[in-house]
Length: 42
Image (cartoon, rainbow, N blue to C red; front, side, top):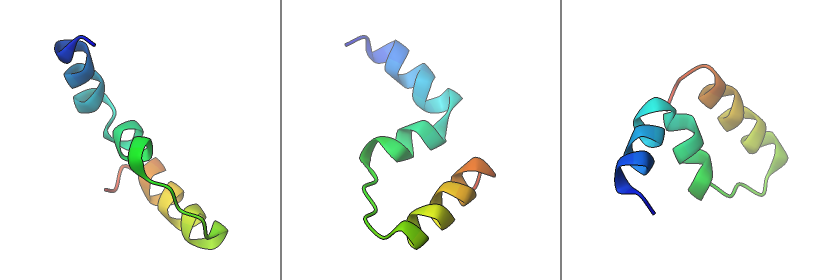
């Protein structure tokens, strides 16, 4: 793993980083969280 590449990805797209460890089982909550991430909210 190239740490500089990983850092660039995290800084470049924080929503992808957040999705990498979020596991939301409730579809309604998941939809709200996904919507917020798509709008750039964290």
